[in-house]
Length: 286
Image 1 (cartoon, rainbow, N blue to C red):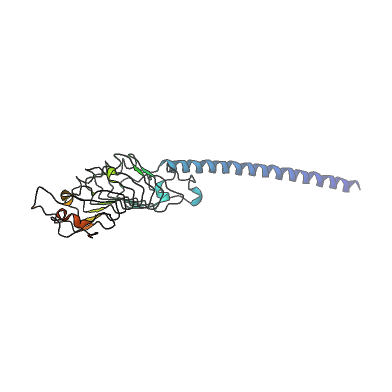
Image 2: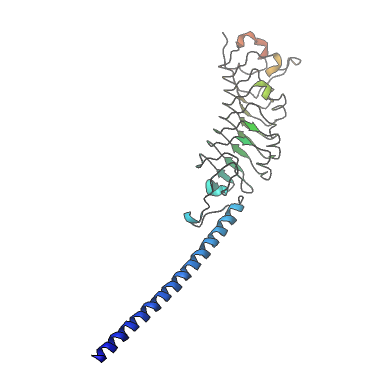
């Protein structure tokens, strides 16, 4: 009987020791995992901060869980190429979700920017300050109501600029090498377009100002071939609108399409205003 009691007590002591040792091992293992997890969180936070700070780099996330999750606001928190499609020299930011409300920071040497159908409200003088390689910009279908003076001043290579379907009431000075400018479907009035806005654009070929609130035809450069002014509030033209009253031999040979339909003007009342044109403008004559 005494032997059995001694064996029972020994078994209890052994079991207690095993349980104690197992608990210590579990606590040590659990503590080690907590330390490793903390280190991983800190490392991931550092990687995300580094990615956020480098808005101009062409970055790709390591995995969805490694991507920073800051919302897009007036200051773009995510690197542009995580929000948009960046190909060699081209950036496509179309219908970005969540809403894009300002011009994104562009990678160096961007040639083409397509930021259509977003909620951009303003273009500032700093948006394109360092991106002098741009050749084409398309902001169709945004909410742009203001463009700061000098916003396009450094874009000496820009050839095509589209601002259609916005809320502009006036235009800024435009780059001198533009060949195509489209501001259809805005709220432009004649007082919002300076007399020399297009005057020095000697390479301008296509000018689209339809569906605005213009009361008169702006000064049109000689190289323009296509001019769309339909659906404005134009009520009159003069002999100097398209031709030159002091030069009866002047011919504007390059222009092949002028649309003035949808305006209140009756073109038949101004026959001397079209004598230099190869064909009559499209519009109402009765």
